[in-house]
Image (cartoon, rainbow, N blue to C red; front, side, top):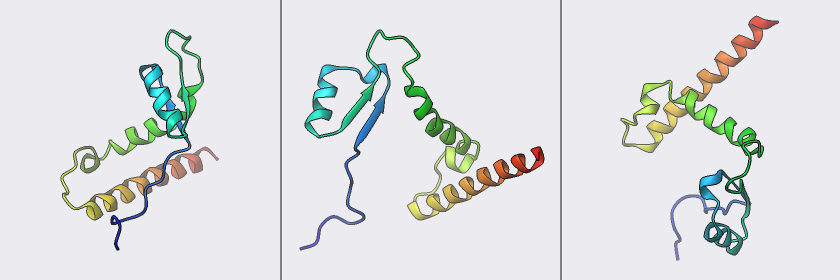
Length: 104
């Protein structure tokens, strides 16, 4: 028998979340699925440290949104969109390398 197409889905080991996801129900569900939750508790100070890890992802997505074809998805086919995503990542890396090179 055939299963579903594509790569098998993997369950994440950890989940990072901000105060909006801090609830007993959410923590219980994550514990039930054996996912370690690292969620900032409600009414805690803003220096919990979660932002340092999440900021890298949000910054990268913001960089990719510079490119209009990635910000607004015009392509219906996933392979074409993935190709533009690869081009965008390559351009970001190229710009970072050029900036680093100019500092030396």
